[in-house]
Image (tube, rainbow, N blue to C red; front, side):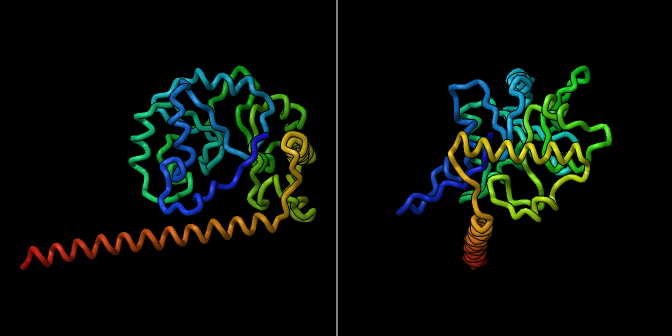
Length: 247
C-alpha cells in the first residue's frame, strides 16, 4: 500500500526553504548510493512486484523517466525512474523556480511515456481505478488482479482512498459493469484494510481533505503574489537603469 502524505511544513523560525524542501521529488536524484531509484505515485496498491523489478533494467536515454498508465490522455506519470547523480540533481534544481512549488513543476521537466507492455504476456504494469469505468464486456475481476502489477486509486469524483467518503458519493463513483465494480470495490477495501493493519490508521474525515485543499490554494496565492512582487521589482530596476542610461 502506498499513500500520499502532506508536504513537510517550513521549520518554525525559518524564512528560507532548503533545496530539499522546495521540490521533494528531486531528492531522489540525490540518492547517489543507488544506481536507480523507482518511485510509485501514491495512492496505490502493489499487486505483483515482479514486473516492477524489471524496470531496474529498462533502458533509459535520460536520467529521468516517467511512465504513465496506458491510454491515459493526461499522461500523468504513475511511475518515475531516476538514475541518481549529484551533478544531475544540482543541474535539475538550478532550472527550477525559487520558492516552494508543487512537484508538478518538476514533473514538467520529465520525459513521460506510456508504460511498456509485453505482447507475449498478459501482465499489465500499470492501471488506475478510474480506468475501470471504460473496460469492455470481456473484463474479469479475478484476471485483473492476477495480471496487474500496480494500480493507482484515483477517481475524479473522490478525494482519495484514505478518506471516509459518504456512501452515496462512493456508490456514484463506482463503474457500472458488474465485474469492473467488483474489482473497483476490492481495490478500495484492500487499501483501507492495509492502511489499518500496516499503519494503524483509520479513515480520515472528508473535512480534513477540504481543509488541506484550502491550505494548498492559499499557499499558491501567496506564492503567486510573491512572484508578481519580485517581477515588479525587477521591472522597476530595469526602468531605473534605462532612465539612468538616458541621462
